Image: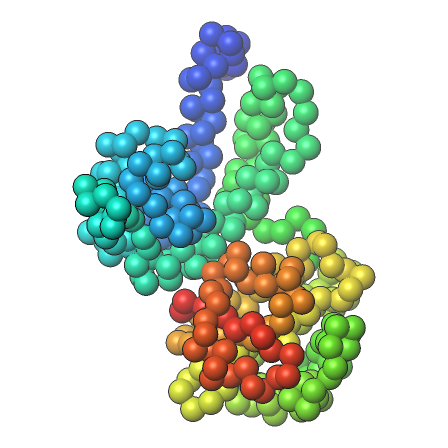
Length: 317
């Protein structure tokens, strides 16, 4: 069957781009639905992303950040206020203006989206656009061809062959090996490290925690991370996460982090924190990217267990 928009690409360029956008948006909607966010309006996502990046913003600033009209932003923000996702506060410098910020519920939702739907959609979009060459018209045609061959919903898995492996006793040696490598390369192994790494079954698994591993396409264990119960208040520490130095750069750390966050949700963890060191700049950036926030209370309560701990972060469960 003939395709008028592709035969008359330059005449109907806007319409062809809109058609492709609508097909990708339909896929994105399905991904949101699978993750339990089918009722989340698409416009909410752009405002939440802008506030997550900017911290807070006036309506006019959101217009500039997102590039759509002020009436559209105002309607979207009003709808988000009704849902309890954002709040409005008067601007101390201009009482006519209102400052928009995420509520605690909005922060939790953004953190969830970062490790589920947003991550999957971004991963799929990168996959479908990877390596496309030529001019704009050729690029659109190639994206349409790729989409017809495999929609975004089938492109959400990592393309590098990595996979998550659950804990089993015979992997305890890998847990020690991977963590000892990064700890000893940057710091000194402390008593609290040794007791956990030498007996993860007793200190993590038997206490109700969990350990996940990352394996490469050849089945080699290249990364590990744990959720360890701490204290008497149902708190968990996100801990002992590392990736083999020879395998860094292929997003194994990102896959492991996201998988542990989602595992914590499956376990109905109510409180989740981590301790780190400022020298772990890349890791801290990754934690921030997926929703962990620096927290002075966590620092005061838990950081004494490690001499190296000078960063404490909390995840909005």
